[in-house]
Image (cartoon, rainbow, N blue to C red; front, top):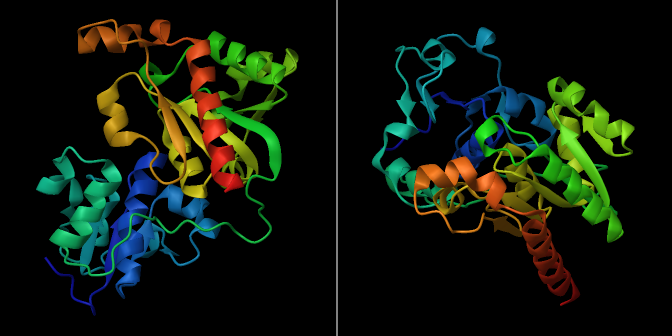
Amino acid sequence: MKIQTNSSVAIVLPPPIGDSLIGMVFVNNLVRNGYQPVVFGWVAEQLADWFPYVRVGRPVEHAGKFDTVIELRPTEQGPKLARSGKTLRLADLPAYDSPKHMVDRIVEIASETFELKDVTRSNGLTLPPGVTCRGAANRVVIHPTGSHPEKMWSREKFLTLARSLERLGFQPSFLVAPNEFDAWRDAVTQGYEVNALALGDVAKWIAESSWFIGNDSGLGHLASAIGVPTVTLFMRRGLARSWRPAWGPGEIVLPLNVVPSGKLKERLWKQLLSVRRVMSVFQTLRNSNSTALSR
């Protein structure tokens, strides 16, 4: 399934941050192989400085202009961008449902389905000028929220985790969305740093921090793409196999495997995952990363 090199191509990213960053792997591979796609999606818009090779468009300005429109999953704007009113959805392709990691599924689609020759797992994210990666040596970003409440570890355990990090000399820094700040305002009165930032500023804050700990969510993928070591909390191993941050150094944390049923695991994982267990994995990542840096 080759795309004509002289055809106009649009890529429509899904709204979730992690899905968009994984979708950018496909965009990066198109660019590496001589195509000039226009990318649509709020994540691409807010991270435009981090993807300088990408042409970002707004749907209202490009209605009906493209010969080929590719979506990861169905969106409202995709068909409106296509001359034909039809789109190609990567999620409909057999490789998208393979047991591989999501990034590797996209790579397989790029190389096998679209027959691209120069293929990489990278999404092409680049630090903008003036951003220093891991400049704040002791700062640990903690992302305690997410788009799916069932994937969010308990608030009390995140606060306990922050206290544990402080005792070791680290500076925990909570990071939430602007519409989540009110729910975390009391953490500020307890002396914790809580930031509510737009996505471009989130990327800069993560990049200048030295570690990232968070739920299974898009910001873990962002930290990983930047190169900041990640610890990601998952409710089940199967989810981690497909969705763990997979660009930079990182570890996953799973609850104790003492429940036989998958549904029970999802219901009880927060109780079965202790602060001590998360701290142990963080120390493992810290030690392995320090060893790698010293070589």
